[in-house]
Length: 467
Image (cartoon, rainbow, N blue to C red):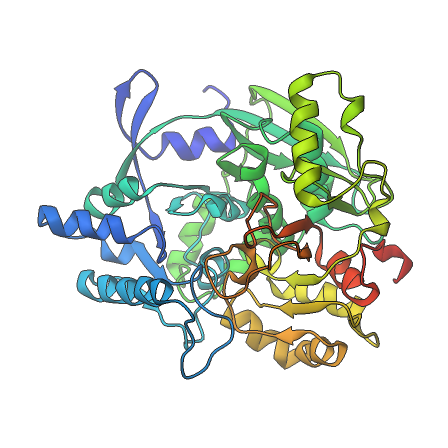
């Protein structure tokens, strides 16, 4: 038998037909539906008079457009309200489970999928959002799709796709004090570039990965898309199984035993050959901060803003000049001298309970700087409930943070939580593109403890000095 990678095993088990020229028709087990990408897909179904083939294979939740401050009139914009209402109506019409905004299962789609046990090892899972790669932390193939592909999933539960090449990313050495998996993935992207993973399914392996919690593995896989890959995966292990056991939609009883038996082979064979291998040492990493307008514009907090004039390539020089002009930064500026106006702790990258704990550890007994406005946004209602049970909200509130309801919030400017033009934000989210957090807003990506450190000092700070 030919040795296979984990990606190969899952892919091959889901091929319905070979269409030739490298294209396959694959079966899709799970589909997460949100308010931004689904309206056109539902409209196409209605236009053709078709029904959803397997309603039980879909879960709907609004996350991008929802406000994180509730009230009598929670939506500041009519478009956001209509998107959420349309999702609710379409879900009811087609018999799809919908997680209401005021329910205990509401949250960011990539947070609630694993919480519910909807995300399982060995499945193919899709969503109309590029950060669907998050779910690969559970040993499944998960990727984002477009509106027309959503229509195909609704109607046939299948999708035409080209199989990716495979890349194993070996992360070795563990995590030093003050360094998190967010620093690891930012440093990796800075090393291989935002195009380093294009065309590849990334499998994360090595001693560092084995020691990561499930929350940390989700953060790692979440930002695979920022390295150019649609798919990031970690082989399931005892940590994976312990996380999933007892979840509402996970198998139970005899079905759990059968699932465990099936999942036991979900790993790359010892002699499997990858198309590319990368080894990255994490033992000597410092906390990382992005300084530009792409995640690969990242360096250690102890570093400096680069000088475009030192670039030999004219295109690179031009891009760096443009990026620094947008960010309002001068070459040679120490990263630790950059002030911030806003701090955002949350998102599908870093809005889980573990992330809130890490930020709260830094904030405990400290106050947010007078010049800073800071918000903490749990990734789901369940995370918020658990955090409040531990008293984490009291630490955030006492420090001067706003404590919000679940949602995508300031990760993306599709809701009320936006940066004003020229505002600079220490953010635990995943993208720092121009306008990502609001027109003219300037984003510095970092870990939750780093964001908390920036909140209390009013500038980008090496969190290791506060621990």
